[in-house]
Image (cartoon, rainbow, N blue to C red; front, side, top):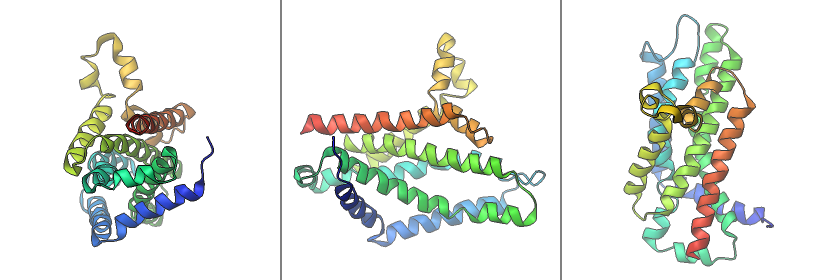
Length: 241
């Protein structure tokens, strides 16, 4: 399959403009930035004053992601269906994969803008001490991979509904399921399946990266997760065609 990156760019530009054509995108990023930096500066447990670490920051971001990512992805397909532009979009001389990649990369870029607003935090820590930069790098790599995985999942869920709120709620629920699958209170009910369930949970792999352990198995897991849900989205669209 030959992908035209010019077509991908065309879809990408259309989608990224949809985030910023109104004030909603800017307000969203502003609220996110203020919220995260407020937590960091004013909540005593948000960061570890004894070790100048961002470990608690990354732990909190896992929770924030459960609401941030679904809000980013909920409109990607559902809005097309609601407004009736889905038929036009699918009949354009673009391959299905090109359309998916354009939408996916636009959501990933928007997440990148949101994460970029947190760069103040490691800079601040660097001015007051000597933080573990490997742990910080691992944490941010984990956030990018976790966010990219949730976006692929949210993109698929958005395809199956034309209501953005329903897409939002379902994505929150499914992301939360993948989130808690790696924790003991959940695993104690899984019996002999516990090792398998924990391995396919995103939190289990994210926690490893957030501790500064750049294990290729964790990176491969996230890449496989992303490719799986992008493929499922591709297969679903092709079936409709």
